[in-house]
Length: 147
Image (tube, rainbow, N blue to C red; front, side, top):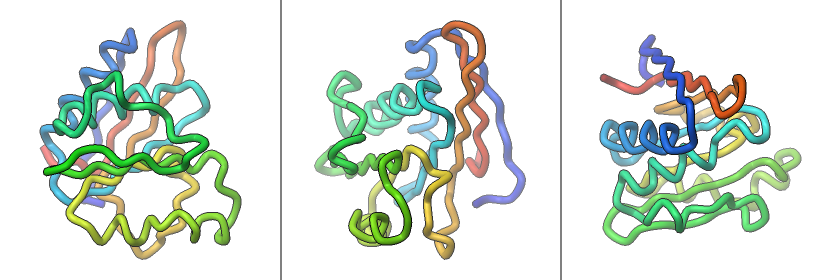
C-alpha cells in the first residue's frame, strides 16, 4: 500500500456512492488490488458498480454481488475481477478462489470483505473501508490511492 495517503468521503445516496466509484476508477493503476471492507449493507457492491463502469469494463447495472459465485469477471480490453469473500471460511476455501492467479494478470481485482484477504505477501494498492451512517449516508475511507 502506498504510504500515508488517506481520504474520507461522505455520500448521501447510492448514486453518490457510484459516482465516487467512477472517480476512483480514473485514479487506479493497472494492475491493482482494491480491498473493500465494511459491514453488510455498507455499500461495497454499490461502490464497485461505479469502479467497474468507470473502468469501462461493464455497465453499472450489470455489476452484481458475487456472493454465491464468489468471482465475477468483467471487461475485455481492461479486465476487472470482482470477488466476494463473505462466504469464504479459512485458508482452504480461500485457496479454491484462484485469487493468486488473478493478481498475476494485468487486471483490476476488487475484493469485497477484504478484511478476510489472506494474501499477506500482496501489498494492497488500495484499501477502502465503508461505514453505514444514518439513512443512505455512507462514510468511505480510502487508503493507499495516489492523488
